[in-house]
Length: 461
Image (cartoon, rainbow, N blue to C red; front, side, top):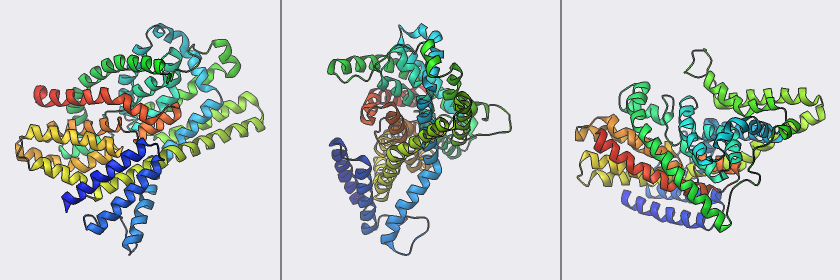
């Protein structure tokens, strides 16, 4: 029955892929195929564990599972994404991003002749920030608010700018990241020890490799897009002049796009302040500060209240285009899991009588593909992670040595998925195609995956 379920899963993966390529509405495609797969899992008797609390009817349980997915996504990070979307809309309205570019123009003029060096420098910077802001979507959106306009003003394309931002969030490398916490628990070690002893040694050479690959691939793709008439360069490449910035927004407004990032770093575990902020709270606080700036600037209630409307419009826009897509992607992933697709893949790898290293490599590749397919690093890792300790024990290997590349593979997979939260969110705000962004990331991350497996199992191992 498990094999039958996996076969059906492959059919629906092909159907969904075809419909997405044909540019049908992705939310509708993922929702319908996900619901059909969940229904088939019930009919075949593969999975009855649809909901936490049953309605008493299998039919209604199917729809209750959608309700629970909606509420789960909204409670976990839906409001956070919406709050960031609102803040982005408000920053654009009050021209704070232009002020940031104006202030950054002089120090960043050193990179004007080397914009792609500035672009790849975002990757390690973002990874350092991820330690304090362990949310790929949250950090990616914050960087789109703050760093994205600076990069485009230096002369890199919008696709290049968002691709390096996505790359900087590709490793769930933080003692407080969900996948990292689960991995450390499975390895029976503290999150900090896992972070220092296993994540950092593997992430450093991979980061260097990604920077080199992105430098060359970004230049190639940008030149190709220009030749094909598909350029995503901004129309005005020159930084906003200081004079223009003063007219459109006071230079002090330059601190507003960076304020949420600063707050999240200062009030994190790195500093013993006794205060811990989450991303949504930091965004709302920063929004209030920005409103005070606007009220002082104009002293006009009509303009003040009209501007606040942009915040709600930004929230609604991201809910409609991003949050709903994440919800539908989770329903699609639930359908795959319900039909036993993931379980069948693992069982197949285990029954091939392979060595522990080969099994580790195979599972890492499967997890990477699952992350790309489901658009969620968490879903992929939570499905495979609990299997690793038993595999490691069976082959006499340390759990941490196997689980680290598998954990990284799950978060790397979501960067090449056009339905992942981070890709959808940052591409929407940057005004580029999520599919184009995912394609930009394929070569760097497939290369990084191969390097990681060789480096971890042959060199470190």
